[in-house]
Length: 218
Image (spheres, rainbow, N blue to C red):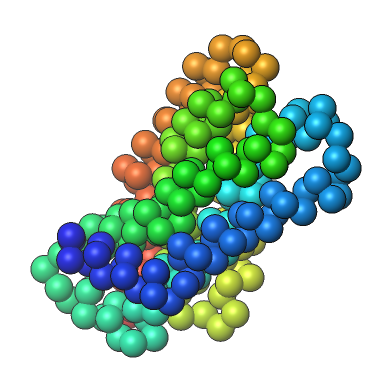
């Protein structure tokens, strides 16, 4: 599992489809928002948490089709299916590699980009914590969607249509947690809901992804 994880991280960094592309997309979204809504600091500070969460969600979406596509194209997926490592572990490792190369850089970059949106000082902690809790769920849901569409032509569009509705609960509770933190309110309830969603996806979706991959490899 460790060897597979390191291999996927190296491929993502070299190909530029994980770390660089998602982070660049996140930066572009956040930089363009002030041009669209105006330079008013009060308005930007109110919508900063939601904008950062939407940017992180879309940035995760950009590189989802690469989770299994490269392995499908070069035949590595067939070898992984016959390897001693269970397909459930393969799916979990793929989701973890996607989070390390895409989700984690977004978490680290969010405080810096929050400055561009005039995010209040008290909102940085809840924002980073919400992204740290929520982005693993985005990666695991994305891995499930990538398993569903692997091998399909123009599967990227279908993947987006399948995954975006599943992202909505994570977005709602993540943005609500960050918003309450900005307003100085108690955010324990959305935090627990967000943690529950993430734990549920980590526990269940590797099995669903493995089942879908087995069907696609027949």
